[in-house]
Length: 164
Image (cartoon, helix red, strand yellow):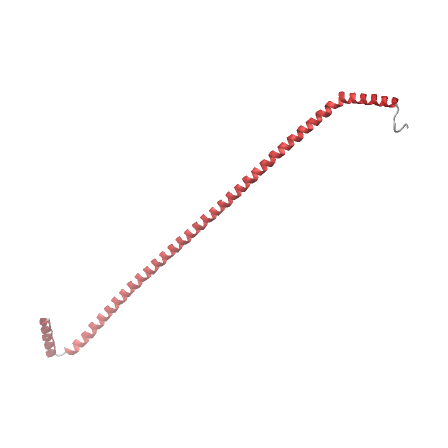
């Protein structure tokens, strides 16, 4: 029966050994172990608090990043719209200037053509007048070669002048 039920002497020695071990542990080891457990608990709580704060800060930063991205896209769209408006304005201005230059060139060409036309008409009239004078001289010489015909012609002219 020695193994299942211990002897009283053994039981007393076990009780004395346990009491001494408990006293030594309580006197020397229990306080440092408890202190280190409290320090560990405090460190874990601090780390958890810091992790929660970091998570909150991370969420706030993500919100800020989303806002910044939305603002950047909005600004990009605004800049693109302004650039498009400036481009369209420059194109319209260039088209207007080209149209004005074309109209001026056409007007200058029209004026030059009109001037050339007037000059050509003047030269034509001048040439016709010269030819008419030459022909008239030749006709009058031929008809007025004789003296009688000259007198008769002058009288006719005088009569015509009086009638008018």
